[in-house]
Length: 90
Image (cartoon, rainbow, N blue to C red):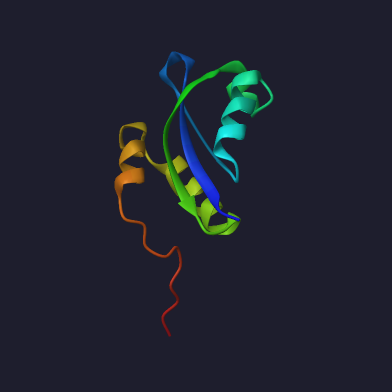
């Protein structure tokens, strides 16, 4: 099962990031008020970007990385080539 990291544009121009296995269903849930608490108060307008990951763990790590980036750079995150999250060298 593939996981999607996504970035939404919400009313007022704010962004919301999350992960899911079904991007379209999750977006509909956010729009209908059944999504996250943030999107209930700030309804999403559109999906700005998404990226697919092989499992929940790597998607969650990417989500945490995305949330640390300044707003101006968030869209660039989806254009960058993603390297393996953790590589242990002996």
